Length: 501
Ligand SMILES: C[S@@+](CC[C@H](N)C(=O)[O-])C[C@H]1O[C@@H](n2cnc3c(N)ncnc32)[C@H](O)[C@@H]1O
Image 1 (tube, protein in one colour):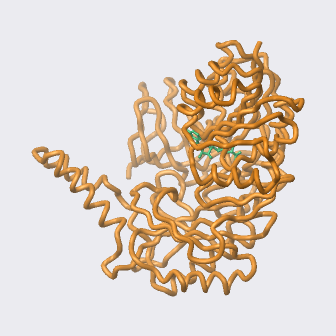
Image 2 (image 1 turned 90 degrees about the vertical axis):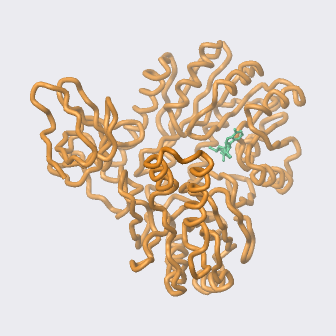
Image 3 (image 1 turned 45 degrees about the horizontal axis):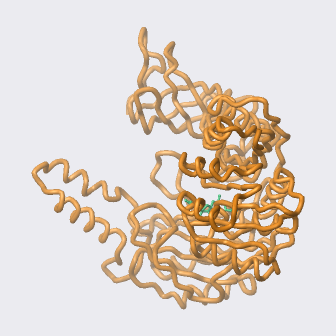
């Protein structure tokens, strides 16, 4: 490992992968990393684990022509703003920033994204809604398994940027005590049963690398080799047993019920033994146990074959006035208490009088439409995941709401059809994933021509270009309000309202 000066004499320094360099952090980027600049040319290094005012030694793990990513290995001089961390947890990098300052930074980042990326102005940035609970607020945690083959099996989170390791964890301060107990009971059982973690190592890249060294091989051979690498890593071990990938713990915050889902490779486990151990350890709080066998090489808990091995497949939950059941495949806002605050802002921005036709696009289990129902004429939801749509339809029935209908489909394709079937919307609420909406979807919304668009965003950098296109097409961005759903992390949620000018 080399130690290079941060600024090369007379030229633009370009650190190499693996270099350790000293850096002064001057700001925070979208995504939460610290930003340092090298030399007169201002070569940017994004630094995980650092905040403005810190001087750090960091190791470069990714390098591009105009920027690099690095990970802090030593804090040389701490920023005067730093406070002592509470949690030994890679997912809460902003815990060293006082909470009031976190809120200020999130507001500034929303404002900056809209102004700089979207080139928007004239809107009112309303005060951020602070979180009700600074810790233990998540109702769903996805842990990873690591180690186990000659090493101790652990169940926790991946180490920060560039370090391919899973860190052991005693108390996850984002989960409730009950959720933590569930992880400990499951891990204890997996260790006692001698299960080991899957090899998440080099993925299909091993096959790829060999391939490049043997340029004469055919594409078919390459495909076969990747397939074989996949089978080796996602199939059973030599003993026929499954290897451990993830543990997903979901909790109905109001019902107190836990849903535990073990994600493994293909192969066998003593599923009944796991359920019995969880039941003995968690008592009445255990709602259901599921087991997913996944063939994916990607680090994901989605997909695969899921079977219910104990109890109920859905988690019961209350949100505002709503009585809900959430399927394992369905999205649900991960901070139940703050989802209520978020939906209050949606309700205010939708400004419904009671007669309007409302579309809820990217509707998940229908919580926005169902929350708005008492103040709307009719509601129509579109959602990609069929299980979530089934939850939404069942939720409408359970809560006695007859004026809401939900459809499974891709918003890009289904929106036009919905307009033909239901008529033009008066108000459209959208709540897309982090990537925001494609241009096609934005154009479909423009075609549908609603009077008001309420945009719920978990990423201001994709809200900004979407909002800019809508403004270009004649809507006016009136107000934006950030809501802090994820204290101690860089994640930002906000709601914006646009009205036809
Ligand atoms: C951020 S969640 C919002 C869900 C819901 N509005 C809520 O508040 O719980 C985004 C949802 O969009 C869905 N989704 C993703 N891509 C989609 C697409 N192309 N068309 C329709 N829904 C999609 C996801 O399955 C997820 O349920």
